[in-house]
Image 1 (tube, rainbow, N blue to C red):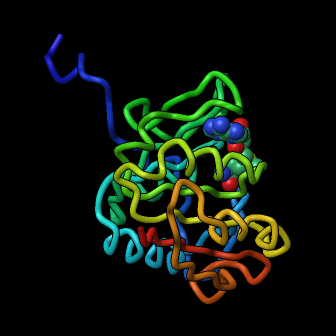
Image 2: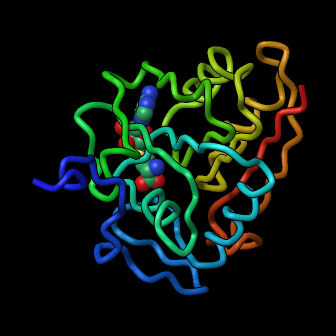
Length: 189
Ligand SMILES: C[S@@+](CC[C@H](N)C(=O)[O-])C[C@H]1O[C@@H](n2cnc3c(N)ncnc32)[C@H](O)[C@@H]1O
């Protein structure tokens, strides 16, 4: 067997990925409406916060696989609860935790954490308390507009002596759907 066959494959099977258009659309495999414009917005956001990205609660991993694959080429890893529903991310870019109260220690090295349609506010505050003082530069939250009121408190209070500058906008201003929000919280201290 050739040596490269023994290595774990880190490439995304792009034949499984939808071709995004400039119009946001919900695909099975991701709660968030996706578009090529939204992906460009995410790429620009990550370019100003360079380093590894950890998506907490990546689900099927569709958005993360699109981010990882060409032409976007973002250095993202997804983490899910065991048994994982992951379908799209290669094993090298996918991790599991044993239960929904567990956190992945990769958060300590990541520059950006992404939470897309998280189910629990406490997951973000727990991550900030445990790993926020690490390499973290920014947190991207994306979800339903109606949920943002609950999640904005994560960045309004000082947890572990950290404070944030928050840019929250209707997702349609970033290429997404009008019923969703995109918030980028940049760590100040
Ligand atoms: C509503 S789903 C969203 C999935 C995906 N982000 C999407 O938009 O399609 C929330 C996901 O968070 C995962 N989750 C909950 N607690 C978690 C934890 N501690 N670590 C990793 N994933 C977690 C759940 O298993 C679930 O798949």
